[in-house]
Length: 266
Ligand code: ADP
Image 1 (cartoon, rainbow, N blue to C red):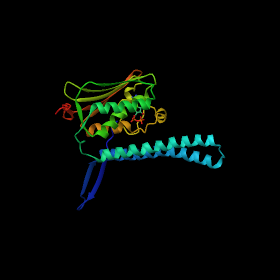
Image 2: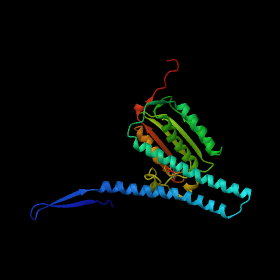
Image 3: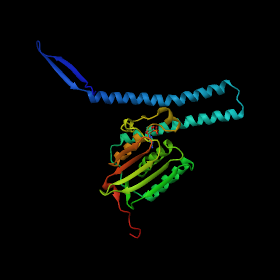
Image 4: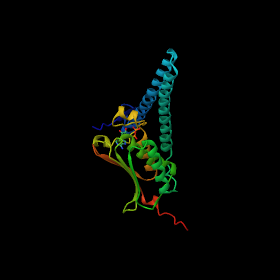
């Protein structure tokens, strides 16, 4: 069921004459419902850490805690505050991406530099547990907005780390396919995602497992941001996954954004 929303307006004119205006407002109503959902979601996401923070503050106000208990409370309050900070930052990122209808600029992004940076961040985040492989299969570079590309690719790597067990293997690959398109992909041997969830993953605040995602430190906006960044580069985010086997997230960039590496002596 898709339902149709019609707006009916009757304008009387003349004697016993009326003009009946029928408008299809389905899309308008959908946009409005989405906006309402979004505001409700943001409020809910913000309220949780704030409620927890207030709870801790009230406890500290009433109880006479010793130094080590105080320390523990401060740690927990810091974690909640950081969560609110990342949520606000992700919301701003998303708002900026949405407000900017222009295509991403054409700066040359050095793939080896990008991959080294991603590898560094990955190892710091996983604390040395996961098995990582970073492959550069083409010497071509990518034209785009460097900060956005780092953020999109980094998001896919950090999701692979956060949702896969310590023993999982994670590989990140840059390749140029036969059609000349650039491909950045991340494959993990993590839990995988069932097909009913796949198409909804890039929706803001959509999570497969609400309770689990919370303690993995995500804001629920990561893949929405990745999708926006991909489309600002005329690219596409594709997701393939098998439950119990793992997932591959790929950003496909058009040929126009792939350049051969400038020769060193040029
Ligand atoms: P979050 O902040 O919750 O990580 P994302 O938009 O980045 O938000 O991801 C949305 C949901 O997609 C996650 O909550 C998780 O359920 C699922 N997901 C993302 N990446 C993976 C992955 N590599 N393996 C399994 N599930 C994933």
